[in-house]
Image 1 (tube, rainbow, N blue to C red):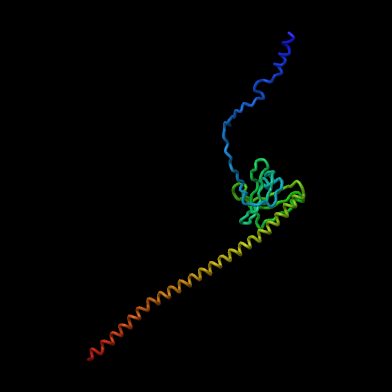
Image 2: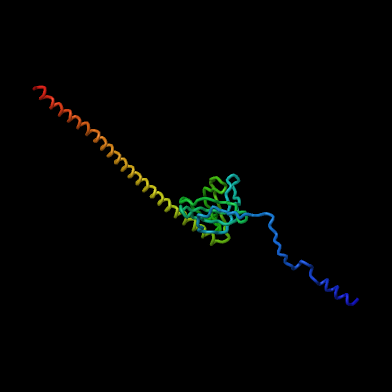
Length: 223
């Protein structure tokens, strides 16, 4: 009786077979997921500013402000063209709630005496078509709002320079093309003149030969 009790306890304390045992078996996943490259459309742009904020748009029909989304607002400068656009995405869904270029004529101003908010007009493309929108954006701090407004104005001023440089470059290209076209036209005129002269030379030569032959025949007839 007493000898059987310890043996029984040892059996109870002993770990179940296979609990800590590594069988070496490998279970293949039921579904194979392939890695997919995700693009945001911002790969060719550099971020100038990146701030958390809440965006509103003015509803003209209802004559009231409506919340557009809470998330991150960015100024993105294109590496090739130098154009800058404002993009804002909602924090959880990443849905675009603002997407438009910063043009030289745009301006931003404080909203109704609130130092944390500012407003501006834009031709926005967030919904897939250009729409005239009046936006209001609110930041958690006065510092962030000031930083946004200062960057906005700096970008608008820089775009004036970009547009002027582009206009000067276009004017220079047009002038260059005009000069090249004029040179080509003059060259074509020279070729036409030379060709016309060459055509006239054989005719004058043949006329001189005919006169010479006529003179040679005259003495023979008089004799």
